[in-house]
Length: 586
Ligand code: ADP
Image (cartoon, rainbow, N blue to C red):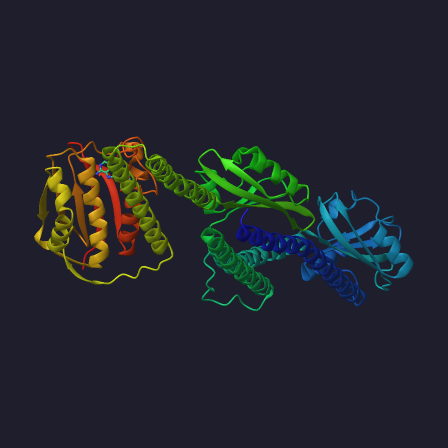
């Protein structure tokens, strides 16, 4: 039931009950006063009739009955004249013949009371007239008619009934009109009230939908207005606090999202409350794990055990874990008190790079020692052979040549290592001047001309017009491309052609060195820029040809990155390696 209907019905029922109570009360009151008035009038008339009879000189020719008729006509009531013994001497509504048949009236209550008190009234059903009658009787003492003892007047109450009925009718009509007006007023009142309640409900719905702007109209000053204003104020207060919480949460999420450490927050029931981006990445979580139990999400038993420990309120030991996907992490967990309950927070620290750098450093030291020991062993061997003095002069010469090659290689190795150390330490400053690609390629080719000639190889240059110039350090770019061309010469067959090209791709200049050699196996492609990494370890080793240092491409990578560029290795569509240097265009 709507508020409007309810308030309307309440008003309606109240009005109906008020009318229902008032109507019988009013009609009872009216009835009483009407009867009292009729009674008063009847007594008055009786007194007048008695007076008139008292002045009667002597009964006329029709006797007392004729007198009764005359008086009855005058007072418009039934007039009965009763003798001391109760017999009826005259009656305005009976003919003289009927009088004898009338009952004796001595025992009538009004006659008895008149005899005793001087005035008698009564009300009863008249069998004669078949209606309720009101009677009033007075004793008489008339010298002209000594047998006459009482005069009695009677009025049928039909008149009273009619009067009452007409009053009741107008009372009901009035009540009906009142009720209708009350209904109308109640309806209008409930409409106004429900409109206000509806307006408040609309504002509440808007607030619930998140729009907290104030309503245009005031709530009013009555009780509804006061309640609405109080609720409004508390909603705005809650809204302000919610906004502050949202800001705090957004700030916290931004901080957690920006952290490189993974963070998991678990509530006292073990449900994940927060999993930041880094944690999702480290634990390889795809869809939103928030709200789910950590056991479903955290597959690693050691991390799960740490969460369990923290949930028991204990701070666990930090653990170093190797995850399936080559990730090394350190995890640490701690309990978080939230009221009387204990949640847990787990921090995952990705130390993969640290461990890789460690390994690279260890490998590097091992590689350097190894790379130096090999030629040193060879040199010592040949020097000892020479010291024996038993070698022929041809052998001696050959040994000395080998010693020379190995020393050269060691020299190269040391030189390359020093250069890498300088590059690592950021000690190599680069110039930034316009360089002509043509001049760069030509300079590199000229430097390696003897090697090219020795292997009957040819360089084909292909430089697009828009890629003719770029900015950089000419000496360092020369070193980088000399390294790439040297590799192309060494790793491609004699008599083959080497391509050096330049083209423009948007804001970048792409410079490439292509050869017709065996190319690089796909698996080795990402690793060729690592220090000491060689695809075919056997190919570049041996007593006669100690081969390259395995540091060339690492230096190239460093030099290009110094220019804000990138170098990549790939295989050409018809085989052969393709090294592409990607530099920002001027
Ligand atoms: P190295 O001194 O051994 O040449 P680099 O760092 O220059 O060392 O090269 C690393 C490895 O990459 C080489 O040992 C070789 O296996 C491979 N490589 C480099 N350039 C080429 C090429 N043009 N064709 C095939 N393999 C190559």
